[in-house]
Amino acid sequence: MMETMEEFVNSLASVGVLRQARDAAVRAWGDDISITLLFARLGRAIAEDFDALPREEKAHVFDVIEQGMKSGNTVLSTAVATGLLEAISAKTSEDPDLAGKIDVHLGAESKKYLIAWENWLNNSR
Image (cartoon, rainbow, N blue to C red; front, side, top):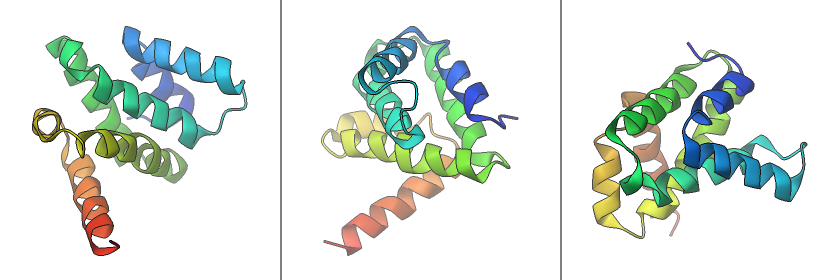
């Protein structure tokens, strides 16, 4: 089970495009980058590069995300939701085909959060 931010980020960064996204964000914002900002950058990279990721890397990425959502570390699970998943949601709201492809890979907790998030967005408009 994923319990620390460092474990979570390092596990995602085992995928090349996410390592590049992490490194670029840290270069731009410094080592003290806010975790929500870093996770949002990772979420955008997942959505932007989704089609290029091999099947095994997709499975790994979404397994790590689900572990983060189920973590007993509420700071981690909140950052995964409000940073990473909301960034993926922002990208997929522009591309229904991508949304469908990503939805297949989401775990139960991730889906539950995104459904609640999208309902909140629709009700606040």
